Image (cartoon, rainbow, N blue to C red; front, side, top):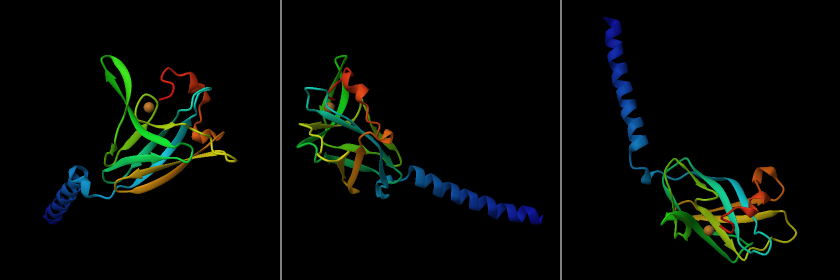
Amino acid sequence: MIRKVLIYPALVLFALLGSVTAYYLTGDKQNLQPVIRVANVAFRLPAPGQTTAAAYFDIINKGGADALLSATSSASPRVELHTHLHEDGVMKMRQVDSVKILAQQTTQFKSGGLHVMLFDFAMPQNTTSIPLTLTFARSGEKRVVAIIGDSHSEMDHSKMNHEDMGH
Ligand SMILES: [Cu+2]
């Protein structure tokens, strides 16, 4: 008898916890603060005779939704957010005004997908790091760097002959 009496409140408690958890996972994430970290930053340097570089990275968001509005770098006077689209069976790249950063998801910028393009790229003098500043609608500015020659920054010169060179 005593056991049944104790189990019932326990079940009610679990049901409440369950609905709170369900609300947290499916509720209005727009109201949660984004918690953003930028990781795995890599640059593809311009091929010989070219001046356009690309930057790739992961935007890891442990909080609410945000949007990436722009990117800047002292290594380039013109930095754009780009995506690739299939159009008439052909892969094309397009500039985008902003990129949605979904709640509690990782958004990857990678070769053949979303990427940052740096026009008239000039390697910064007397340094081995390339800076990149990402500006988010809610999280503000995030500054990251890729270190040349550091395996963690995944500088990949072998990609210079890739078919979508310059993207
Ligand atoms: Cu591009």
